[in-house]
Image (tube, rainbow, N blue to C red; front, side):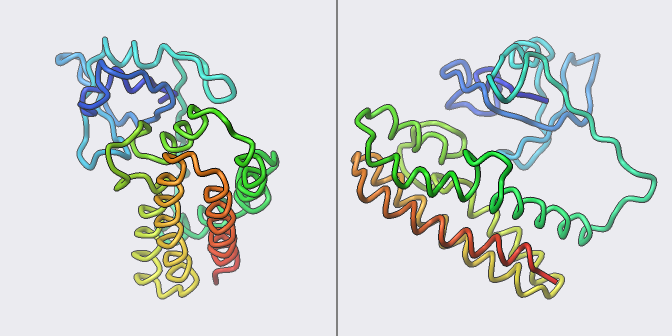
Length: 223
């Protein structure tokens, strides 16, 4: 379901009823009419969360241009034969790699990073740099430290390492190492952005694009 406004999600105490962040999504896995709540899986939490109907309704009442209309749901229809974990991973990683390496619209993926390398040197407003920091951080907000300001690359690295070792796929293991490197570079990028150091930001984005292009190329060619 989503986009959702995190302002109404009680399990994010630093955001709940304090800050409107209308770009979140979660997976609805059940509901309870007696308790008037939906059961959800959220990538920011490990356990199933329970959101009251009233707050779920308010959270859905957002419109994000180019992303989502109000009250948007997406449903998943599963085939009779569920693919294996390995099949899902192979297909998903290749699809992600293709989207990042050769996106249909060049405002996404690696081409967008390379475009930003030039554009960021023209930024004059602190708001632009703070926007970059916010959306590199999980959840998306200006952080007190940069522990979670890695663009979720460390999570990608962990998944790839786990599956790469499990199925003995070296390309996934090596891609994991690249994303771990990218995670560290993105944290440095956020620190430079906090100082509005545009030249340093530009240099770091160039490095990130190079590292991730290598990682996604590995995912695309993995056997």
